[in-house]
Image 1 (tube, rainbow over the protein chains, first blue to last red):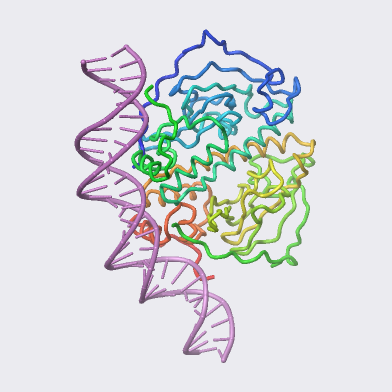
Image 2 (cartoon, protein in one colour):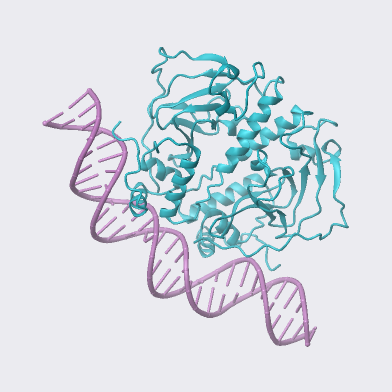
Length: 219
Length: 219
DNA sequence: CGGCCACTTGAAAACCTTCAACCTATGTGG
DNA sequence: CCACATAGGTTGAAGGTTTTCAAGTGGCCG
């Protein structure tokens, strides 16, 4: 059995008073080009709700709960999780700024996966209306399809079947190619994602000469 | 190392004379509801090119070649493949009728993955125009996003880290939940996909009491 | 100071891969 | 029609890798 994750803490209203959740048009946001990989014109329909800052471990969406729109990660790192029938919670993906959470649930009414912050993270939630997106904007649809397309690319998990060392190495390379932030996750979380025991991740890192990979330490 | 696949045969013009490749509007096709999970109205923009019947092993798209639109599988089973830097070709997904090939390449100009028929299979290729879809139809964009969303769901690979027996079992259950056709792939292909040696797949099937899983036999 | 959490390490057991045969259907050429 | 080649499938034994279990380290925080 691979690394078992500890129970995440409950969603809190931490910080909710400091930065109010707020409805904005991405066109007026300096990060819009990183989020959408294109210039966003006002009233194109890129309307989001800025969520409060997530603390490490804080749950953003809970599996099977009502789907109210996908999120864009704007800072930090968020883990996508799946609770299996055997009760084990596994990390199925890590999302960094510019990537999305909940795209895989766009066709349904509930979240297919959960999501929890791995490091301090901020996200914006897209305004959404069931059962599809309201008719306004082909630009939004096109952007979402492009995002979804890109995420399918990452999802191939090219390290399947490789020995532990190479799997960990491939994971690190992949993560580094997507963001320049230092690795924010624990070895247990890496193990959960790669399907390896925590100890195996440790030994793989030792043998790869990647000892001292920066991770969160203490709380 | 996991199961190594034999070289696929080259794309042939097999059968090209029997069923001509043909441009059609999905609205006039009896399969349109399975393909798009919705009623398709004429001139909504669901225009495809019917491809000739693929023989088992025949290559549909080659990795890195020019992207000319995603495909919908209409019968049989198609494997999505990735050629790794170490020269090993791995199956990263199996696609059955109603599922798509090439969605992960919609944001680029070339195919991120290859694709080859696992059993006899037929596909339709969407009409496409770079760099996105021509402005006509929000209905197509919505349908594609829904498809993409659904494929992201499958991509989680919930059997990561499970022992071989359960991995194979989970794979079979997953495949059966998506189509009622008998398993069309070889044990080597299952191994390639799950990251297991062919022999391990055989032994896993024995121990699961799933001996006699129907697969292609001989040529 | 004590507890918790992330991280490490060692040793034994379990698991999987590799290698080397061998079996069995199918299609081909003689 | 039969022999043969081939591809898919199966099996056993040896060896290597990974997991498990058990223990221990060190930093941070209450």
